[in-house]
Image (cartoon, rainbow, N blue to C red; front, side, top):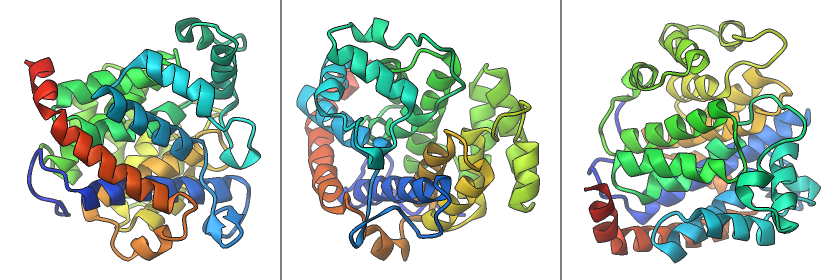
Length: 315
């Protein structure tokens, strides 16, 4: 595999747009699969409805633009005001929705994110952090701010580490810092999380294996689903198109709460490696197509204007 986009630290509007579109398209595919539908997405008229990941990505993009970088207070306030948590089409994770409801009630976000009921791992915050990887030019800031955005609604260390690794993966691929086939090894060496570490080291040996076998070997904890980040990386490396990567990621994860984010991350990673390609026409059917195209343009412009600040913050 070769990088579709060359110049390190120079991201064009089309690159950013296509990766965001791929993530939204992957989410739509994951939503359909999680509901047992055979259609490419959940239809809203003739368009594919978007879900909570796209909804919160668009909010995050505005926060990055307005603040010339990430601001947790602003993100919490914007989520409280704008997150469409009561719309069933958005399919917000119940734990994430609970945190947002508490923030709306005036509870500080660092308190609101504490869950009354212990829940399984949730990587929706990892998937929504994609704009961070597209905005910042340095890996250190990408790693730090991807965790910061996840912390607004999530507290589990596993969820936060998944957010960091996913954002770093996208950023590293885009800037030519890692070759696609080396990605599992690089991320494995980067994390101390034993569960993620074990899942990632299995990915390279599974790339020539069918998804049924991959699903079994990426299932590290009984009575759960295969690890969503590892599934996303496996699917992106195995299948060349974002659509195919998303479909296979969703198939592997089954009907778990991580099916949708795994499909979204798989599609975004595939687009980062190979571009959107023929799947662009499918992406044009997204309900979110126009707004993503507009926000991609604004995000690239803001990233360029804020680059001096970005560089100073990293020094």
